[in-house]
Image 1 (cartoon, rainbow, N blue to C red):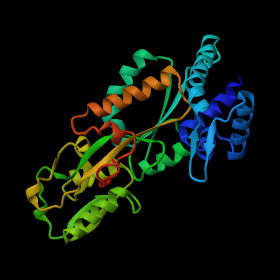
Image 2: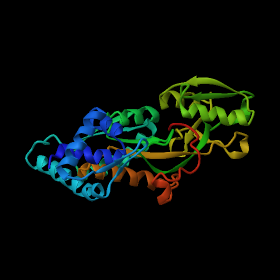
Image 3: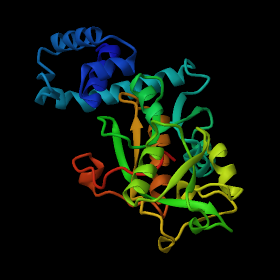
Image 4: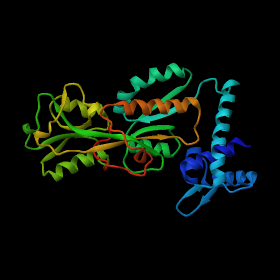
Length: 306
């Protein structure tokens, strides 16, 4: 069997669509369709049921899928044994700066001991932008804050959001609350302002930055208030108590995006180690199996892109 055809087959199955698979494999939708047609001709059976809204595996397709994954894994192992992958596998990982600071110090040493030859390329940015890059095939793994439901996002759990000020400050110190937030268009900013609007609390935007450092500095100096997860509260700052008059922020959903058809041991171990470290965090509430599979999204996404 042609492993290029098998890789297209596995990717379509995991993406649940030809267009999404094409983005992952850097091919046009028509090219992917032709590859699946060739594989179906070789197998003598249809592998997908296509409708205007969905792409689903047929019974023969379901039987072929585990064999296809196994053959692709064997191909990667053979290349590794023959030295074709002598530089080690490259994993392109996207996450926010604050998530990287929280989870990578534990992940990297643990993972490097198991796969010392694997190369890791870390991209830090806003979750929405990272998910777009993943969908375009530019990233292999993304740990993000969910902005909207996607086919690729696997829910890991919920994390509460909190208001943060300098240790010697209180929201009562300001008649108009000075805020330090991300630029317009970020879910962080939108939900913080929405919560203040519902509470009819006066505010003004004092500081704006895409970088956590640019947000943290005015907050640490006692000049502004911001929104964080508990894990991201900077030194010299504290969480605002519920009795101090600021409105509740709810929770954010943490999700993991894994590149379909990427099934090497090194890649699977990286994703599994990352998921384990995130869900071990005491502030992360784990979803039920049904919620993790995306059938139930749970509480609405609110709060910052941390």
